[in-house]
Image (cartoon, rainbow, N blue to C red):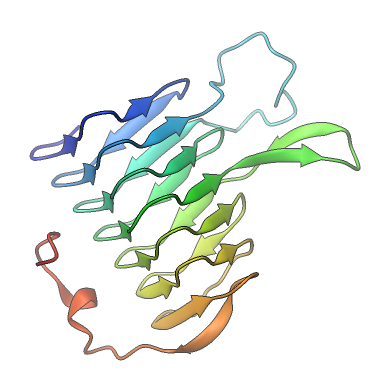
Length: 176
């Protein structure tokens, strides 16, 4: 944990390899951050030798309250990103029904992103920098187009965002 970081009360972090919080990043109250550590004798995930169960928050990144982050594989939140509202789920692992194994993939949330309330983000998903994921959306794929509002079930590109939007030009992580 770097300078001026904060984890609020009733947040649980369990069974992950690593938690990295860069300067001024925050995790709000009542979050459930779990994973499946790599240094076990379990048969689960043995086919993924490069997997690491970690959560990385970039400078001034923020997870608000009452979210579930499954860090069986890496979840990375870029600088000045916000996981807003409550009740969102970030799920890096699932069962591969074709191979009858549990499999995991990382989730990457780019810098200066805004993730709306009550979303589901699945392993392998990428939200590019300078973008928004609308409330109640399902992000289950990689997107690459910056300055875009994504939303829906499953998420799709909805419209462009102005590069003059003040949220994306902050130098202080706190939103007033």
